[in-house]
Amino acid sequence: MKRSGLLSTMCLFVISSLSASSAYAIKYTIVPVVDTTGVFSNLDPDALINNNGTVAYIASLDTGGFGIYTDGGTPVVDTSGMFSAFVTRPAINDNGTVAYHAYLDTGGFGIYIDGGTRVVDSSGALDLVRWPAINDNGTVAYQAHLDDGGFGIYTDGGTPVAEIGGSVFDYDIGIPAINDNGTVAYWASSADGSQGIYTDGGTLVVDTSGAFQAFGQAAINDNGTVAYWASSADGSQGIYTDGGTLVVDTSGAFSTINDDLSINNNGTVAFVARDSDADGWGIYTDDGTLVVDDSGAFGTSFGSPAINDVGQIAFQAFLDDGTEGIYLASPVPLPPAVWLFGSGLLGLTGIARRKKAAA
Image (cartoon, rainbow, N blue to C red; front, side):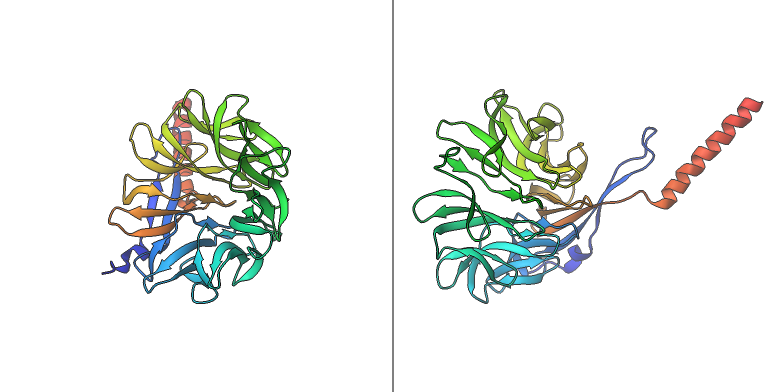
């Protein structure tokens, strides 16, 4: 039996305390975008958000079948038409165009946008195509295998970005990310065991010849800043940008940091980590700000956080009662009334000091 729709009107607040060093700051409000109290039975752990606040995700229906949806359940495409399944996470740009990996009822699979416009499929030279990323110009990057056994990252109808078997890579390539300038970032390794973060056809960002031992998937913003997860030989984990600039690591407040991360055009990174003191999981931003954790209504599982330029973060999570949902965390500006209240206190303090000095 479905639980009541109470969750759909629930709003959770994460609020910092009033202190002498910080006047008053409401960090985030967290509200459900969609949950499993309605028509959906399951929600994919990877939700994406664009700069207009539109959230895209894969969901299964109570009545069977599943599809790609935005926001509270607006359908983009589902399995009632020519598609039989949707697998890897969708992508959405600021124009609202959604790119996704889909299997066809007639066999084969491909990358499509919106209601079913084909980008590329397995009827040509490409075999397995998956993990699409799309920029605001409509360029779609994805990972693909070739009929002849090759493997790499491609854009649109099959333009190669980086391929296994070339002069740079001959072992493995990860999930691509693409910015509005068309720059593609990704993780890759070679047969000699080395690993690195690269852009486009093989421009090295950072590799394992220095302090790093291994890398996770990469994200890139429109300024060309590349963010990524990395581990070091001493066992530490961290999130870094570009050639090795530290964002956060496990030498401080965190015992574990996942490679589920995203970066916006302001350079803010959102990630999932485990607190070394409270031993709980949460979503954080690069300055250590807690967005949400499992100390309240949320369980210990959080999907990959996606952050937009406004600072909104979309994520999938389970509640302690078993309800599953996709949520939106939005930074809240300081309420004007609080500023006035604080200014009034400061003004009264100033008057008191002047009176004391005059006496």
